[in-house]
Length: 399
Picture 1: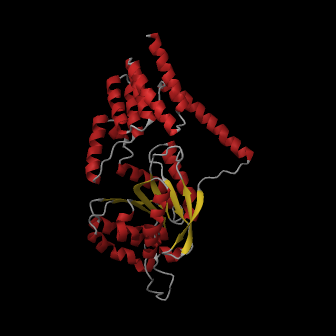
Picture 2 (picture 1 turned 120 degrees about the vertical axis):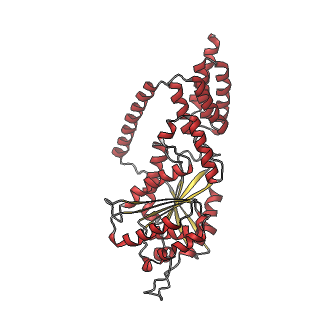
Picture 3 (picture 1 turned 90 degrees about the vertical axis):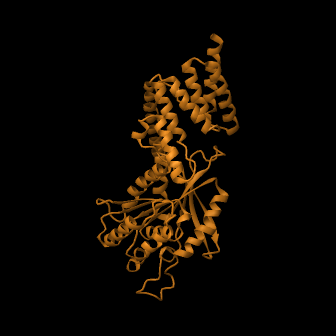
């Protein structure tokens, strides 16, 4: 729907930012309560207790009735819900570098029981320890099916955990790696039970060479965890399957409690890049043919068809249009329209290129379709599309 000159769009963006600042200031001054997400309950037969979930749906979820979303499950939901929602919303809505996500934060009842991966050798009588495998059963057999049934989800799921949650995240990847497609382990408490997880990691990785996932693992300045963490990195270097895309980062200026913010941001970008949603700017600069070849290679690597994100392709089209490379822009917009025939924006953008070429009749056909789709979808941009159609019709009259 971008039809303005670059200068005009820049001026409009400045005006919108000013308006946003005024609105935010007004909210604060009015002392209004700001609420996001909702709480719901699920009774677990596996755990024999009721669990509380904190859930946040992407903006526009109710309006875009056909769209499905990846799900980010975060442990220690009481602590991390707001942080995760804020990071995902900023990266998906403001910068558009990642996909919008459904966020499911799992609150705790007995954290040590659920997240501990073994019964510590120094306290074998502790009946609360070692419940991680049972908690995985809860996730696999109850929680994930519940979320998939109730909400519009894709097959892509991410599990994020911090400290004991990070330990559980790694344990889940090692024991039931196919359950999630991405794992974020923030300052994982790998020293637990004399580094029991680290000691079995090599054997489990060698036994699961078909593991296909993304792992993003971090540590702050945490001398008490460093040795176990380093040992685990060495094991991953030696035994991780080629299909496991993993990264490890040490944030020397962070401590155990500050690593999650930086990790979440960087991990979500890495996952977006690995899955093909985000493209490196240097790749975009090489042109659309290079982008298409990149996605063909990525599709082969992942074993499923992956296409360039609609927004990325659209931006490339407008970049060409701003350079007056109209034929190339039409090719790019047509590709996007073929890939996303349900999107009003792809019709509207292709219509822009047709207008630039002087083909107003073709632009009208595209806009009629866009208005039809927007009406069916109850799209918030319907009025703008109707105005665009009216403007094209007026041009046709004057020809």
